[in-house]
Image (cartoon, rainbow, N blue to C red):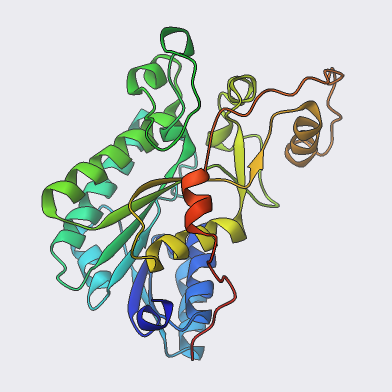
Length: 298
């Protein structure tokens, strides 16, 4: 399957984000031709320099709120890897940003429905679209892809990241099913990277995630592999929770705190209890058993 697909052209949108940029490089390594749709204009020139050195890379100045620019980037592509990145001028989540993310998801899926060559869409969502709900009013159970965050619960506690991801993903799924678009979603944990800060919108409600056993994170390389795996595997379907780290004991918290707040030392972390993990990525684990991340096609 990989050898057949690697002769094809795929689009990565937004290619200027951490995930998008890593996907572009890995897809090129695997032999794909890539349309890099850039939302961040500051990154446009560096991608254009890269495309001048690689004939398999084309760069598009794209805006998720501009339907025609999306259509232009999708021309001739058999697949799309889509993720919404916060604009650099407004790097925080609020109700307004949630509305923008939903509009963007609608535009992108509509454009895919109108592009005859698109065979598959990999839609990047978040684990925060899975686990936020009132635990006291529901039967305690493990969380997996079948669960959805409660939008009203997110609004009540101003969990804007979870609300935005939930509504945007539901919008994408509704349109995909209505228009016959073959879509899978990756519901990723907190993306770990050297510049991770306490301001990351995913971290709002981190104490509750920790106590509930649903605080999960993912390394960039693993996240990229998961995206390519679900794209290349014809048996993939629906949603996939994606993480390779679980933060459920004080040692994990101390490590994360040292990364988020390097100038301070965590206090009051003598608690040796381990909170039971209550979230599962078994569906993705099974799919990735035979995935070869090092595969390269000439």
